[in-house]
Image (tube, rainbow, N blue to C red; front, side, top):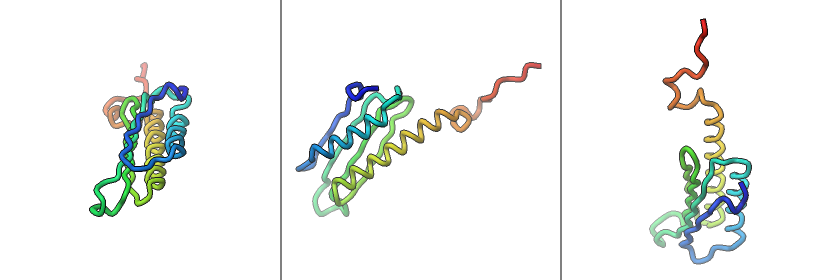
Length: 122
């Protein structure tokens, strides 16, 4: 999947968002989508909740639209870059775990009732 094939939507609700951080997030997602057909898009929200009421200043959430189930990660931090890095690491981990699980059908709970090996031909 090429970088233009993966639409990435940004919802930025922070006063400053450096272009370098945007590019870092995009590159992480493009690398994750490379050679795979399961990702169809992503949405990133960067917000700064009400001042003084929360122990963190920034909240970053990333949703990766993928088949069969979407992946979601959220990170909160006093620093925007730390929140972005935490959410990015979490979403990469989740997508890789989901791909590994799909590659091991005997571990999937939805297939637990079905027998995964071929029937005996006696």
